[in-house]
Amino acid sequence: MIPRYTRPDMAKIWEPENRFNIWLDIEIYAAEAMEKLGVIPKGVAAKTRKLAKFDVARIDEIEKEVKHDVIAFLTNVAEYVGPEARFIHQGMTSSDVVDTCFSVQCTQAIDIIIKDVDRLLAALKKRAIEHKNTICVGRSHGIHAEPTTFGLKLAGHYAAFKRCKQRLKDARKEVAVCMISGPVGTHASVDPAVQEHVAKKMGLVAESVSTQVIPRDRYAAYFAALGVTASCMENLATEVRHLQRTEVREAAEYFSKGQKGSSAMPHKKNPILTENICGLARVVRMAVVPAMENVALWHERDISHSSVERVIGPDATIALDFALNRMAGVIEQLLVYPERMKKNLNSLGGLVYSQRVLLALTQAGVSREDAYRIVQKNAMDVWDSDGEKSFAALLKKDKIVSKKLKPKQIDAIFDNAFYTKHVDKVFKGVFG
Image (cartoon, rainbow, N blue to C red):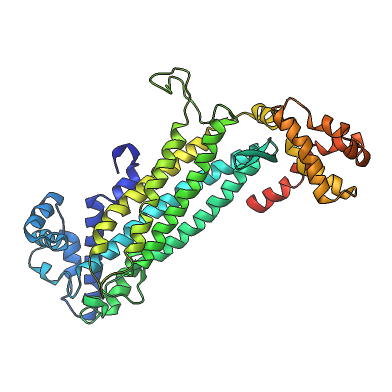
């Protein structure tokens, strides 16, 4: 990812220094276990821990010759450790180091992302409670449907991200595995006790059975969880974008002092943050299919997955980390316009209450088919007037309706309290 969309803590996870530090830890912990098994002499791990260093530029230089990153790393470490370096990496394969490291990096990354989701959840909860009873119009197909509250809108997104958090926690568990099983995963050249020891030291779980790589269905589940989170984030961002449209103007991104919206039109206040978030969500989801395709490898291993993961690992996590924090900031500073919400709700002369009229007529003895026809006829008159006519007034004048419903009954239908009577119960279910 480019620096513009990269936050420092997430970037550090994918930098060479962190990767090589993890590799070194894996090698030293493996050496500790091998010492206990008598495979290598006592003291190798301690001396390696004391003397081992690496130089990224030197590793790159060696790799240009040997064309193998793990060998280049081990060669560079040996330059610092000395003769005992020959005991490092005993019986292990490159994948033992690379895959276990990738698992560690993925867990480090998702820990940050879970914290990002927590920040967004806190913002959504606060704003949802603030606007629990702020009446606005609900829309289906982009068309006015029935009244709802802005708090309920936000509560729905809160519930979605609460589910996302659980998926992310499950994904973390899925990838937090260690593999030190040697060539083709038989443990013939490296005892299972080594894997157990390294796993414990690294805060991972030992892989139950591997080939020569950690099974890639684990990482497929990981990136799928990132993708779903990105989609939920885009759903929320899209809602904000729609509400900020000139014709709607019910909510908007915060527009700071001195901010400019357009190089050509000084009046513009564009939803640039949420548009950016929608774009970054696509970048995150772009990693999902390649991660799925990585599951199918040749026999015990090939490295067709490797190049993919070198790209999607950093890109997907960096993009999601940045976008989630931006989304949290948008919600924290979101401008909400209750009066505009009321104006929009009433802009069609009361048509949003049509279902209640329909139901009232059926309860008064009119067949559903006839009731629908009567309500729709009056509704279309109001619709064609662009909301200039009053739906309630037309209903009171309608001969069939007036015989079945008294004026006070019709007026009662247009009471918004009907639509908010269960809001508290819904909020209790969402927020506890």
